[in-house]
Image 1 (cartoon, helix red, strand yellow):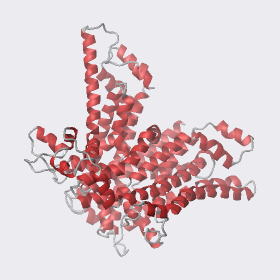
Image 2 (tube, chains in turn green, brown):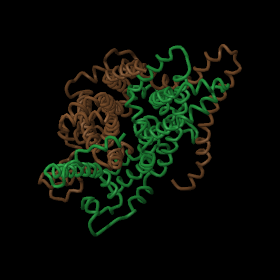
Image 3 (spheres, chains in turn orange, green):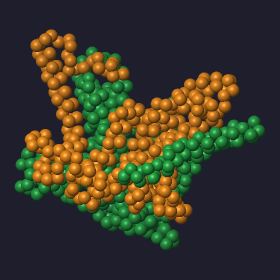
Image 4 (cartoon, chains in turn red, green):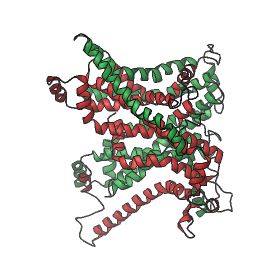
Length: 309
Length: 330
């Protein structure tokens, strides 16, 4: 698609003769365009670069000069901030918790959504279209509406971090993220499953393949791109979530994910930016790696979720 | 966490990582086995409910039923007695600065500024980037803030807005830039005349990439020969944008806009991290959180949640209409 669009650019002015007024005007507007593009992009990155530099600068330097001076001599860089913040705060354990929360809370809703999406796409049952419509409606409902009743249900039935055995302590967040992640997951997967050619299903049926065979051998392998998008989306969403974690495991440092711990540090460290920037960067590197390596799928997920809607 | 504790947790890690998928697969395989024991005629009637069942239970149990219960709680006192609209009265009674009104005002700021600026900037970047060859690269740099948490975003921008008294070298980027223009530094996140805008700017920085990516995809969907024809007819680039590109992108702009509206109404993390809702920066989601956990006021929290729902209803209806329109075209 981009090739077709790239063929025709005002800045290139390929037809005008060299050094003619049109040629100069075209070149100039090209220069302005590149300056604007690069300028905006650099400006956009300034906040991130700022904390990256700051996290490697010594405490005294951070408080006496702007981070941009890190680029001029004397070059003072240190790993002290990282070692200090990791040894004095709960961040290391929270890092573990973030994985323990994010991985099951990604697998469960994606799997359950895949089952449901398959039924919505390729099975007949009463009220099917109405139920699907309800799920599309639920997509917009603020999570806030569910906190009070769900939390009191969890407390009344001992589904809280303090009442559950180790390992299962994350259960309330897993369940909550499953409930909250399902409408979007079902919507995205059902749209994808429905677009699969129906001949596939007919010929599989003629071959005598059962429902399970069709699902695991045909539908899932063909849906790897959609599943990958959804998994990345859900994983990043949970890894970066603060609100749901605060509500369901908020007061428990031994199960709190990185976002909760980092938010607490911003209160306790105040202006201690040597530690805060290191902590923030520490919380960012997993999503950044996931994002940079799997960006294609992430973007595809966003497009499937919103353009088709 | 040291390696000793990690190793002691290892069995749990393995059980969870292997156990959770195993349970899920066992469910679908086990129930299918049971369905096959049924007489032929019943199978197609039972099977769909087994496949959608878990999803329906979760969606009903975590979203639909709680929403109904919250509506009920919003009409009750802390002791569970019916008190009519008293909770709403407390939240909405003291216009313009009491109860929830500051939060409502700020959500309106969010709704307008966050949505329009992200859309505008997203569109500008999409159109500009479409004209350069290194598009993919610059797009992923603008998009990157989408990958980081709103908590980290809050830390990043608190640092951007860092304040030092006048006369001392400014270590915060924004105040240092003001200094270049001989302006006095401002306490961006504690001064009620600017703090909302400072926070919204930070959040907008994070979400613009989202708008840009979707709008850019829509832009690429416009047939090149259409633009070519307009150029041959002598239309200028600005006219082409106004008369051809923008109208064709309108449906996507609307879809992105509604998504941003929902994000703006749900705004929480950035406010929680940057000001905790102090200095007149409160928003409804944060007010609800505070009422629930710091005031123990369930009825009030439920009423605030219902106000949020009321704000979302138009978007919800719009989404359903869109969806049915798309379905009708299938």
